Image (cartoon, rainbow, N blue to C red; front, side):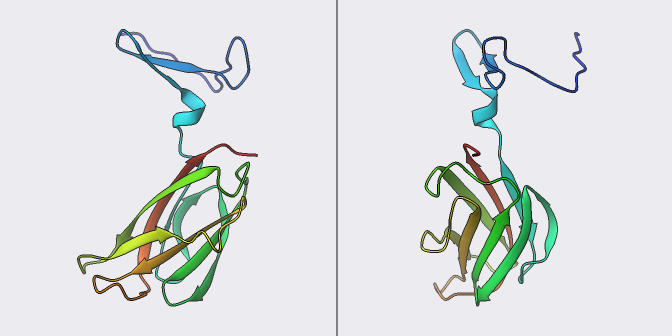
Length: 130
């Protein structure tokens, strides 16, 4: 088994262009496939742990936004996925596009009845950083 140990990968043609080949034909840009920010936070805005997030704001029941340390290129240039960390089934987390920005990830949490609810959450985002 071969092993590569490194602190830095740089593309040959372009610094940020590193391609990963899987099987005979499938390829993926390494940079495009990485999550650029993620968080695990409690029912307020306190982080359990995070990457590329600096702080959060609690706007009211189930309404949160978090500031990025390194912003996305545009407000619409990223995707967001999340899970509500609760023992009650049916809770959801959605992107709050009326509150998000290139440097802010915003979300709303609802319970199984569709009512805004405070809950712990895990969120990851993918996209192009500025």
